[in-house]
Structures are given as structure tokens and as C-alpha cells.
Length: 193
Image (cartoon, rainbow, N blue to C red):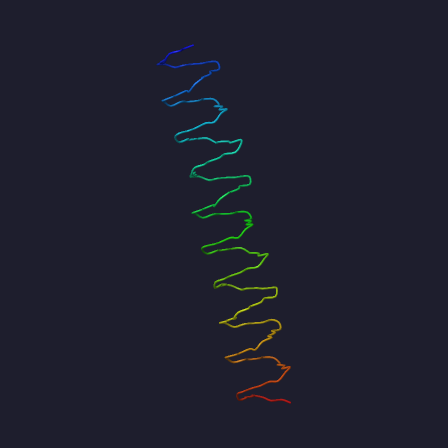
């Protein structure tokens, strides 16, 4: 039992268990060649540098900002209770499932096939650089403007008035079920009865 201050200028070697009933203050570097077991709370007032792998057997709670300069690998499910902000490119090698609304403030580039199980609502202009194939019924409540040639492989049914400001060329037979009213001249290259 030592009741006063003690200075050890050399090495202290203890072969058995050591119990310190009060605070242990170490002002120099400390090397622990074995396992450090801490049964109570631990407070670090400065940086914690870990050179090797680190395993946390229970929950890890971080209340301040956290910087990860390397790769973050997560093998299980990940839950983020607040906003997730990513400033660099992000690669998702699996499926991205979003249960709520999604807002994209910039361009969305998709290099593979895209399947939409619900309604697609576009409030701005839409540009399709390649073919657009629609296999189901399509409703257009506004104006359809087509700058190039248009090919329709099946019947075209129009229930309202139709204005054609240019030339109408028909290569096959034409059937009119009602009255045909023409306000201009009629020019026929051939007439057969």
C-alpha cells in the first residue's frame, strides 16, 4: 500500500492483476501488447487512431460529424434516420427501392432498361433520343406535335375534328363513311368508275 505520491524512473512490471481505485493518468505514450477490456463508459478527449481492423459487437452511436476517407462496406441492412447527402458519384450494384417520393434536382441518366409499375408524370419538356415504344393505350390530353415523318402500323382513329395544314398523301384505298366536304379545287390524275 502506497499512500503518497510515487515516482518510478524505470520500468514497472506487474505479473498479476492490477486494480486502481481512482483515476489513472498517463502523460506519455502507452503501449498495450494484449487486450484492453473496458466494462464502463469510455471518454476520449482527443483523436482515436486505429491501425488495424475494428470490431464493434453492439451498437455504435456517433453524435458528431464523421469523416471516412476510405471505403465503407456494410454487409447488413442500413437505416438512415435523416437526410443522406452524397457529394460524389454513387454506384449501386443492386436494386434501389424507394418507398416514398423522390426528387431529382438534376439530370437522370439510365443506361439500362427501365420499368415503371405506376404512373409517370412529367411536368416539363421530354426528349427521347431514340425510339419510343408504347405497348398499351396512350392518352394525350394536349397537342401532339411531330416534326418528322410518322408511321402508324395499324388503324388511326380520330374522334374529333382534324386539321391538316399541309398535303395529305394516301397510298392505299380511302373510305369516307360520312359526307366529304371540300372547299377547294379537286385535281385527279386518274378517274375510274
